[in-house]
Image (cartoon, rainbow, N blue to C red; front, side, top):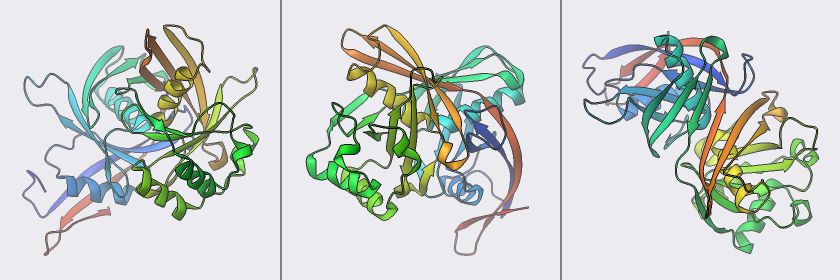
Length: 320
């Protein structure tokens, strides 16, 4: 188990609900504040036990590394490069534990070294992460577009005209599926097996289905995100979906073409986990170039976990 030579090792996993101020809402992340010495297998075992969409493991930075911390992210099934809600949860928990506020933390992730702003202090703290490079894949070819719609139980007429079904990334890509009416969102009943096959074909594990709200709504869009290929049938509130969605909307002229534009995205309503993501899209002369996502968080408890090395070398985790 990395540097831990003992057969059993105990650790604490903090549970933090991100993109909300209310425990039990938003998107829950597991957070291990000191993961020094844990192997990838140990982290995976912990994430499988915690069984939330992502668990973040904070590792100390080597001397002169050029960043403050190293954060690794695991779903119950696999390591992923970066995760918006687990970044908010991890840096909220770390800042509260260390008593830090109003600062910027540089964090090494699978999407590179990213700055994370800690704004304010205490329970009212907001965490803002600068996401990775904005990358647009070509719009889905007709056969893939149709397969995605079939898997989601949608028809071509359900889509918002003028916008493609397209993969966009700011570090962890999602396929954007724009709906003509937000009323279609709550009725979605995706075929998870078919969506998993779409992920195999496209190489993208997440599908963000969204629609525009009316002008008097504090949220510009409502969305849902499905990622069954990595063990997340539906994610309550997703920074790495709302962020690239902001770049996508800016690219296609659905946001004001100004140097920086901020809007809110609501997600999780159908799951009873409503949360709000603040998205800021920065543009240069070529279009959207940088995306930030931010939100609040709430402490939601903790788990004590024992890791055990089995005779065959497998690492298992159990609650204690």
